[in-house]
Length: 143
Picture 1: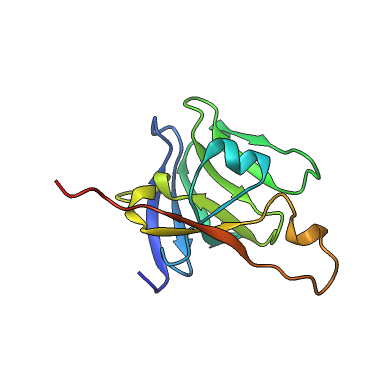
Picture 2 (picture 1 turned 45 degrees about the vertical axis):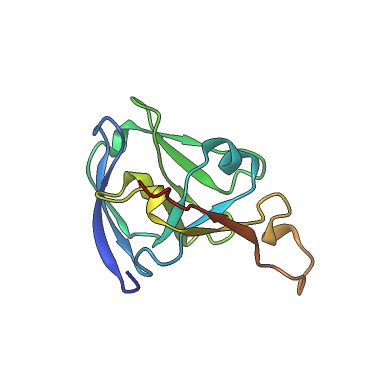
């Protein structure tokens, strides 16, 4: 998908359910190397601030912040699933866990760009090179 789409999403237990507008569809999945992303291992796609509408369970989300405290990471307080986060690199965007999207798996993507979250773009000198560090690949074995 390369055009904007609206998708249904939920945490593992279904306590948190929402709709999300993805302006780039599923075309730009990514991960990052910050300590939080390394530990959770999720693949995220982009939604704009205001692009998430909760159907049920918004009050069941737990927020976690670390380091600079700018990025806001949200988890279901019941099952622990990471649903989305407000990005530090662009606070006008959410990263949405693709595993929460109805009918989508992180393994649906042959390649996922990996961004540098350790040497965060907001911590670099103005004009310093920024871009993906690499790519994760998934190749399915033939049966």
